[in-house]
Length: 349
Ligand SMILES: NC(=O)c1ccc[n+]([C@@H]2O[C@H](COP(=O)([O-])OP(=O)(O)OC[C@H]3O[C@@H](n4cnc5c(N)ncnc54)[C@H](OP(=O)(O)O)[C@@H]3O)[C@@H](O)[C@H]2O)c1
Image (cartoon, rainbow, N blue to C red):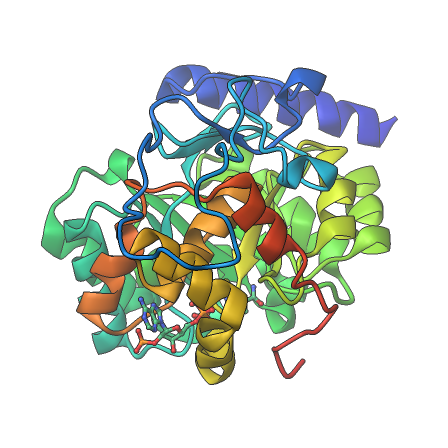
């Protein structure tokens, strides 16, 4: 009974908040199952540079006119990406950019510079976490650019040690960021007290401190447990995802609540990104389009229907990572990268 009234209250609060803030409230229907919508995305690839490769760059695009990637359809389900707008509509109606910046292990000073470079390059999604210790730098970077706050989608995460005192940790993050609200807050890991911490995030949604909530480093059982316990279903699942570890099963599990998959380690992480860049398939796909391996990888994430947040402290890399809109991987190229799945985690934990 208490749970029902809590659900009703929170649903009302979210709807009221959405109306006040001008957010649409949309559901996730079966027709949304799929990945990337073609409308407005690149129609011609920068493909002049490669003549003799075995991964075809000339077959028809993997993105169909109905907006579903043929390659990704086998496992990519969830809300549809609109690559013309570079956004996805989450299960609460909030529009989230699909192109972002990660800030793992950046200092406050580095985070400020990276956020500055990313926002100047047009990136509008910034990912940080309380445990990264750089929320102050992130907030400074946003303010320095002066982009309207409602044009930035800011994510932070609640660390496990804070799960027992989550309400205070949420306020501390807002204070460090210098913000009245964040657009997305995630539970950083599955752990003891995670349901209580999730409830604290739900209360913060009702209080207008958080627009969307989600989970990170959860797998099938944990996703099902949290969805059952939640009054507000998670909008986002952020897990390690790259071609060697594609997260197909958790993605399908998350799609039951129309939860979007967001890739961490999208390039393989600091230690292993060069292994992925040198992978013959990825190098060949990149050469097909005259782009860098990082850009080819990013395009694979997007066309698969994964939000991507590559981390970087290098402004040149940040600009390069933001410049992925004028080429499209073909169905053959998507399938070739899909086939790299090895079930191989690259993170140490
Ligand atoms: N929820 C979680 O548990 C969790 C865990 C890990 C990460 N994350 C989030 O996910 C984000 C992404 O993960 P990550 O940063 O660890 O790994 P990543 O994005 O897979 O790889 C980062 C590495 O890629 C390099 N890089 C980026 N763009 C490049 C380019 N165009 N050319 C060459 N190198 C490039 C960076 O080097 P430079 O700095 O030299 O550019 C850095 O060493 C993090 O920043 C963080 O926000 C979340």
